[in-house]
Amino acid sequence: MKKISIVVPCYNEEEALCYFYEEVAKLASEMSSVDFEFVFVDDGSVDNTLPQLKELQSRDSRVKYLSFSRNFGKESAIYAGLKNSSGDYVAIMDADLQDPPSLIKDMHHIIVHEGYDCAATRRATRDGEPPVRSFFARRFYRIINRISSIELVDGERDFRLMTRQMVDSILQISEFNRFSKGIFAWVGFKTKWIEYDNRERVAGETKWSFWKLYAYSLDGIMAFSTTPLAISSVVGVAFFLIAFFMIALLIVRQLVWGGSASGWPSLVCILLFITGIQLFCTGIVGQYLSRTYLETKRRPLYIVKEFSEERP
Image 1 (spheres, rainbow, N blue to C red):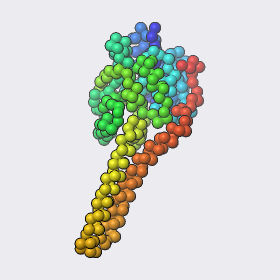
Image 2 (tube, helix red, strand yellow):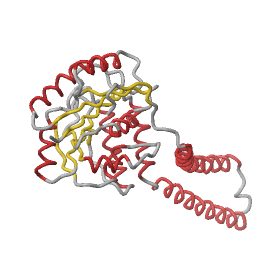
Image 3 (cartoon, one colour):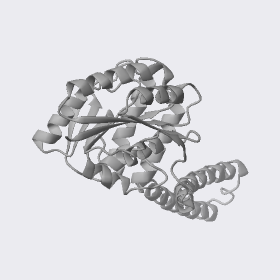
Image 4 (cartoon, rainbow, N blue to C red):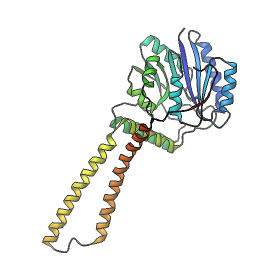
């Protein structure tokens, strides 16, 4: 029998785990034609997530878990889950049940009978999400699709089912600064999108603040586009030409009218403006350099402190 591995990144999900397990266990009983394994990755939780995972594993041999030594982030948890999965097909899901487990039936059918390598999901609506977050999320997808070679789907989720071949291709990309949505698109493969309405968390609170999402969006842009570097170069050239034109204009005015080039306030304003542009461009270059610096260190993406006896 073929096997489906469900990878579940967890960070302080003690309130949602019992509900999530009930749903995926019900799904597994309904899909009797395939085997299942549930690979939970505890991303350094500080609540009772790990004890609950141990209890689930003691009751169900299909449950596997890995526990990080600290919080390394969801991207590292996804990578660890994919690396330690053994299924012919691998799904990624959140534990908060915003990703409906019942859709895995449709995903499995799409891959097996329609010839796709991946069945992925996107939110058709953003009902229940703060309007400010929704606005900036849509702007992010519009910007990154214009300035990068990959194409992201507005509202796409990490929730998807993939073939083993696609998963192995993703695991070949072991870069430190990870942006999974971009990696899924970059490796290619034939993908079919499934839409569903946005759902609220079954329990607990979201771990993604506005600033965390902002930093995550910067990671995505920096990882899959060098356009900001080109923009900084264009801005630098443009202001050089403007400055050259203004100097020529001041010289002409000085020769014709005399004394018209005096006045330190205007000079200070120009210097501050040009300096601000220079710092802006330097900051962009610094972002890329900092990511290059982190990549050259070749630190591990995660450190496993504890795992179930039957490690995947």
